[in-house]
Length: 449
Image (cartoon, rainbow, N blue to C red; front, side, top):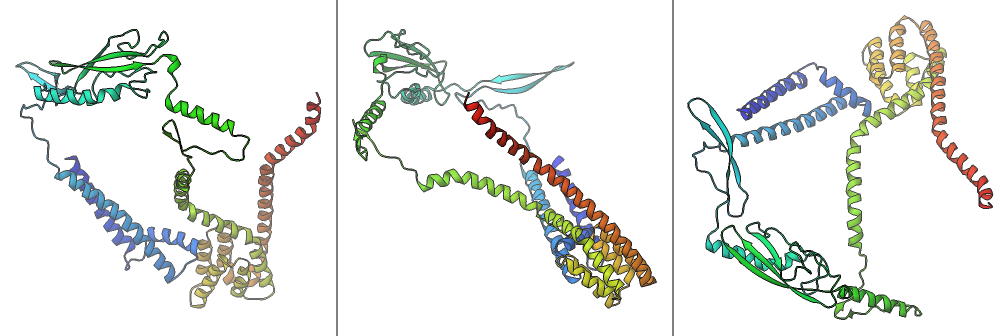
């Protein structure tokens, strides 16, 4: 039922999304709050307008909508797959017993009489082995015991470290108990004692395999070496190679032998594949970091745009004021003054002037120009221009001169803040430089003590 409810919710979401697409993105609609938000962001990044902006917005919306619907469809198909799974059958009272050697399984049982009900956990043990199954399991376990008990030893005829005596065989079917004929050398838990040995001692290890009903004993012979026999064959070859290297130090080259006492010797060189294997994880990490950093590119571009437009605002409004006071028309003055920033400001201003020339109202176009740029100084400036421009150039010139004064004050304040930030960044290098100078001055005095 929960899966059905989830599917119904997904269908409802799909229906709501379809209605929203019809309402907000249909070509016969005048637009809504969704499209202007997307278009505004794209327009700031690429300075798009007109048909280009519409196409870019449509492509962006289509791509995001397609990704959303693909994800929704996958969730829906997954829910349908869950529904197609067979339902759990009602218990018939037939409890499957764990296979031989497996742990007991606990099942919940409910007991009901005429007055009350009680629940408890019944442990269902594993099935007993047949005679044939026990024989196979014992043969398999016995074949692997010698390798299992070695631990850190090289072989059973060269025991120098403690042995490992497991409680069960490798498959967990049989329990194992251990004993030895010389407990003073090898104990029942595998501990090896060599302190009092003078010569190698052969010990018979006895392993008893059982399934709880049947048993089988396996005898394993092991030779424990006294401490003077501790050196292994490989260790002996290592020592001999070191001695050969020391003896040949009066020559320019050391000739590595092909073999020593039957042990093959060869130089292990670092290959380019080995280097790639070491560098590969770093490359994967770097690729992952670069992938996630791509998500911040739009935000960084918007930040650079804002900083650039903020930095040229004072020059822009000052040039605009000088051109208007010289008698040029407002439109020509705007286009000429916008040349202080050709990437973002010039296209915006030129587009607004073209709209006015094709019949759009000046006040509405200038106000929209400020909103398209989206920064407070520009919004304030073009809002003033849209209000005052129709009244005459004298009043416009007075207001532009006031804007120049305000922009100059804001520019000085911004320069002051940047200076404070720069001084704070230089504080740490200055402290480090001071520490180095003090260290250089004090070192001769300290060294001469």
